Image 1: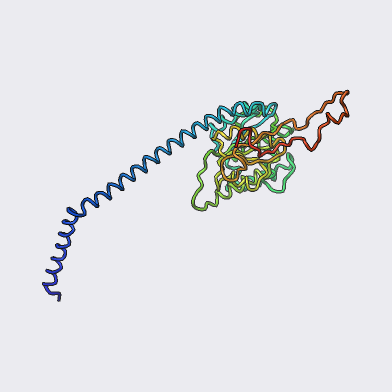
Image 2: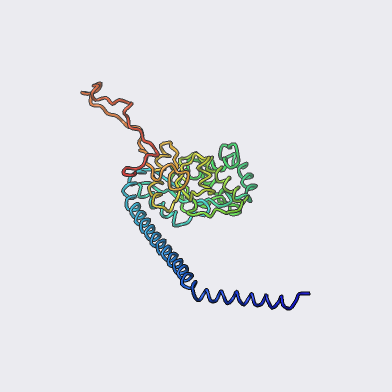
Length: 337
């Protein structure tokens, strides 16, 4: 049994400790504690204000950069795609704003936009795999079968956008089947396409946890681009874990990331010229991009040389083939550091 005196001594010790704490806090330690807390609050306030100022400055710089690039892009891309027919193909998640932006931009570059087609989720989703496999097996009468169902479907799709086959109308109807539509023709296709601009999502959320269905969808989309044979450029969000990042690692299709960024307004037309010239490029500001802003390729690669009969064969007027200028698809545009 605990003695009463033990309780009494414990209570006295507790009250003494409280008393000492009150005396010290109200006396010698009061100014010290108050000064420390005040300094910490002032430091946090200064850090917050500095962060706000830096954020505002960065935003002003970004806005100025974007406005400058947009102003310059009209002159830089003008006539780069003259007499070229480009069809816009929107992938699942592509917004109307991005489609309108790049449609106008292609026209500014001199291209004729020959139509707009939306690819549905059934072209890539795991749930529609059985339908895609069955459909690809029924396309033998219209297209030459590829090594895999996705490749066969892509061949049929390319016949639709080029319109160069007697079966184009039938294929378009089949691909737009109301039950399992693979595509939707938004704006009628008015002429065969020389190149395709694929537009994906402007910003894509990458999940922290594994997502099997999403991974399968990305793999199917990558297989789609692996099978594309027409000159094509794919612009979309290019962060790690996105479809564009996957396409960059395995496909022969040119890519431009950050479709809403001002750099894409220059890169997309330039990348199409590179595709038409037989080159594959990866441009933009995300990981995997070769350069921020690339260079255009001349569309008339074959130069017709004419010689004056009076100077024909004159060594002084003949050009050394070794001195012929070559276009590097990844060379920055003039003025870029």
